[in-house]
Image (cartoon, rainbow, N blue to C red):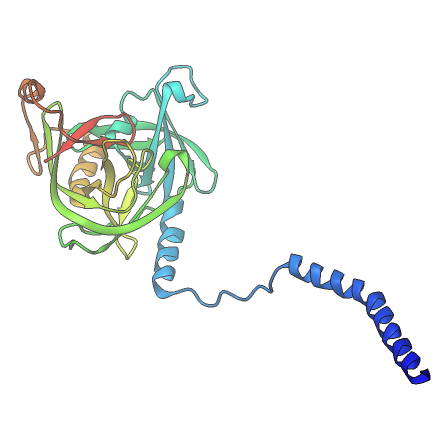
Length: 299
């Protein structure tokens, strides 16, 4: 009898000690669960990630968000009287390149660089036939370096492509993809037809117009100009004017402040004929320029 009572006493003591000791253990376990797991180091980035990071770090300072002020008294860039796109540094003299449809009808231009620097600019010359415009910084302050020029003549479908711009006003955005087509032809309803256009699946959206298309070396191969989209948003097909066209057009714009009709890669058709094509027929699928909502159809 005495032994049984002794065993019961020992068991009761152990139960009591367990109850007393349990709360701190439960609290510690609860705290540990809420604190999350230990963070482990990421390790080295992959080679293709290093390439992408290096391209952005080197080129993005030379790319600016451009706001075209359409109203004479609108210094704040109000949405109702302004439009936005992208521009990039062309030379050390303060010249920059953008799309014609971005600068079109602008009373003044305002640029915002990656550094936060805000600069005013003026239009030097335009080439509507190839949707290009040259603008110049109004003051003589320092500028980021020009983007290195590459070549689009030897491009192959499947090569990597990178676009830097300001889609939907989101500045300093990098997208990547491949060259998905070459020698495309696009035309608008005025009868304009541009050939040898680069096609890419790197995401291009409203606000990317005028921004650079780059190869894997970070060199300029084109200027983003339009996207193929019935809805107005990216569906994986964007277009860029080849850099060879820039090399031919931009120096002439800087030198002459004007642009004559181009005869290589562009054919200007009859406006009345283009309008007749739409009458009595189905509206062609559209590719929309990112700012200005100028429609072009895929050929």
